[in-house]
Amino acid sequence: MTPPPAALEAVDLTRRYQLDGVSVEALRGVTLRIEQGEFAAIIGPSGSGKSTLMHLLGCLDRPSSGHLRVNGVEMSGLSDTELAELRNRTIGFVFQSFHLLARTSALENVALPLVYRGVGKAERRERARAALEAVGLGHRLDHRPSQMSGGEQQRVAIARALVGEPKVLLADEPTGNLDTRNGAEVMAMLDRLNSGSGVAIVLVTHEPDIAAHARRQIHVRDGLIELDTATSPPSTTRPTSPLQQSPRHSATEDHAPTPPPSPQPDPEPRLSGTSDRPTTPPSSPQPDPSPGVSETGDHVASPDPRDSGAGDRGVLPDPRDSGAGDRGVLPGSRGSGGGDRTGEEGR
Ligand SMILES: Nc1ncnc2c1ncn2[C@@H]1O[C@H](COP(=O)(O)OP(=O)(O)O)[C@@H](O)[C@H]1O
Ligand SMILES: [Mg+2]
Image (cartoon, rainbow, N blue to C red; front, side, top):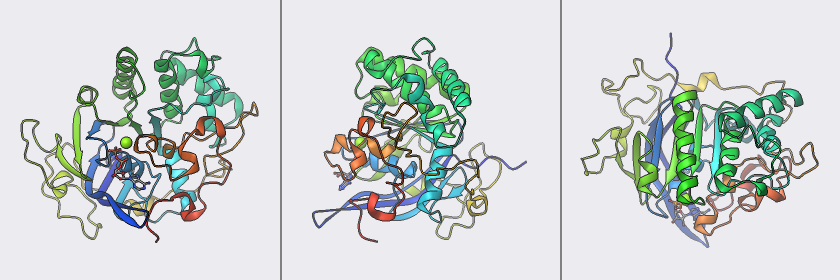
């Protein structure tokens, strides 16, 4: 049987932003492979490129160069609509500031991603309830975010990220707005979910204590990986080159290095992801996860990753980057080409 593809496989990703005519090279060539079920922390100082990398890994943004395969699917060939579809089915996001709909119950917040998949209301509610129970909030289904602690709100956000059973959970500074106790609670929850459900977790943080929860630490500095404990023992401080970190690229990758015999448990070489490109399922009338209005008439925002990360760098390149929790995102406001990627160079 063919082994599952890597959850995420990035090859030489770069990302340049244009800001007031100045080019900012936020990522300078990141090669990284996240296996199914891994728990990895991306750690680095502010401005090192962590959020940029997370946005690329989460297909919220496209790289300036390089390749990314998500669960075996090469993203570069996908249209924005196909990319949104892939994201909706494969990746869950958790943000520092939760991004829950303020006037909407926990249950409805969690059910939201399933709306985009065309899941019927009864099933949505049932799955949302189960997801909330899985994060220990079965007794808070009808509470609104304002009626919950920060830790509980973040657990609601985690339930929302997981309700669609993604392969990967990307969490950008998920404890950044929490006190120590609530932060510990959220990390314990992520630990449990990772071991229990097998979802791969990539956690972005600047706090070593938080990064220590993960089994693998990927240190980013100045847009490059300087140390990856998956390929270097933690005692080794010598920075690794990006090429050393991902020995198992697709043989079809034109500039991928020749893979050495794999030292890792994956028994077979990568398959090219391009042949398993998904098509939009007929059951999903809205491939773009931005439906606009919920059942309750509350304006809704997709749990769109671009909603976060902007705050901590003081750049708001996208209207969806702030306050999305309440203002909502209109249908089709994404996926309209480059307009949603303000800040990138013209291409
Ligand atoms: N949309 C943007 N436009 C211009 N520069 C950006 C944008 N996003 C990030 N940057 C710059 O890219 C670098 C990396 O930012 P970021 O990925 O947010 O770092 P981190 O998450 O590690 O704090 C920083 O120098 C930041 O100012
Ligand atoms: Mg950041």
